[in-house]
Image 1 (spheres, each protein chain N blue to C red):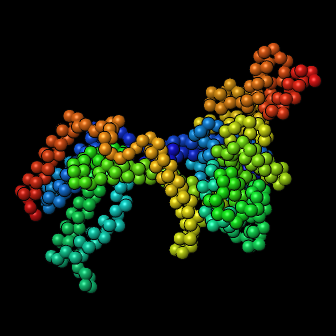
Image 2 (image 1 turned 120 degrees about the vertical axis):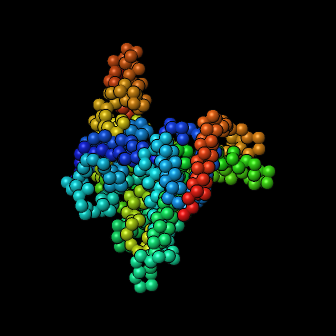
Image 3 (image 1 turned 180 degrees about the vertical axis):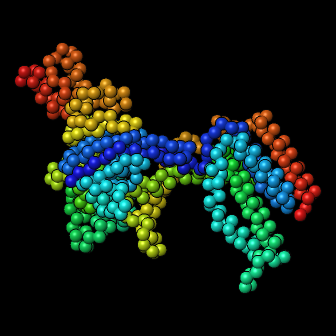
Length: 282
Length: 268
């Protein structure tokens, strides 16, 4: 049960004056149950890559295997794949359309052809998992605040019970509290249901805090693919492509430059804290 | 990325045709279209086709882009041809049941088709070599005298350029929402007419909302930057005729004279 991507390339507007290579020979393996972070500056191909995972974009070259099956095979059940690989787009609240939040969340499971009771049970569960309060369930999606809308939209995907959950900057434009809550809920979901999570993010802190593995994309290629500590070790290369290491990494490095004897591979605040305490001999 | 692809049909280039003042191109296209109806002889078609071919050559836009514009009128073209083919009176060539094809009908249909094709290609040359915004600018300036008749030229031009600006944005938005709903298992392709129409609700509702939101934001942003209509408004790049525009006008005049002469000399 996993996903393999082989020599994947994608060209936008092939054969026109505006041809642009968005993905260039990407090779990846996404094993089950991993929490993977995808970083890269704007236009590096992150969004293009994730749209291939559930077949919304068809690769110009290359192959994708889901659980060993070629998804470009003739007659492959693409709609089935889309319910197994849940994709939450950037600003997902822009896709809400139903009369109330609950009905909107039901849209996904209903399209999967489930019986009514099952659909409603899943919608309730998903709304709960997304952390939306019960008093909002019967409201029009357009009466909610930005953060609540975001939760409702994420619930719309969760209700489909995906095996792989892909989120494209799920916290863009939210306040710090809303951001932490949503990421916390995703992390809990990852732990409890053991689903694979792919998180596209611009926040190095978030990525360092939650994920087991980081993919760094640059110009349509995978530049690094490793555990967070080793990826952030290359912070100078990351800076060259418009990224950075988490801020605390810079703090411990600055301390080292001042003559402290300190571990410099801390990527989260907690790790930095214990590194500092250790360096102080406490 | 998608935005660049869908912005009108503009084909970026650096030819003389690209650089011409949009007013020149508008007048030129109009002249060409009118000229197509000034003759009825084969020589006239040859002259017009030759003129068009030279213009296309100069513009440097690959010919396949011109042909793309024709796809949209294929139906209209075939209907016109069929009607002309069967309903023109004259010497019959082929008769079955109550329908007959006449020699005049064949000629008429062929000429009509050529006229339509050239008409479309002629205007396609303009849209391929002029950005939509440039075109609206040209229209605004060209129609400025109408302001005296209280025609709101500036407002109409502004609305047009905003509409044009929004087409690629809304197309991108449509694409995004469609994909988002497809990720939730929506199906936009299969089913009958009713089912298809119903399946558009999850697309159209968010699209309308987003269009209203964008319109609201834009109105605010314009207000914040002090927009208050066309009076006394200056341009960053005012349109001024260059030498090449006058030359283009001369060329147009020469072409028009040729066509009129051909029409007079060989009226079929």
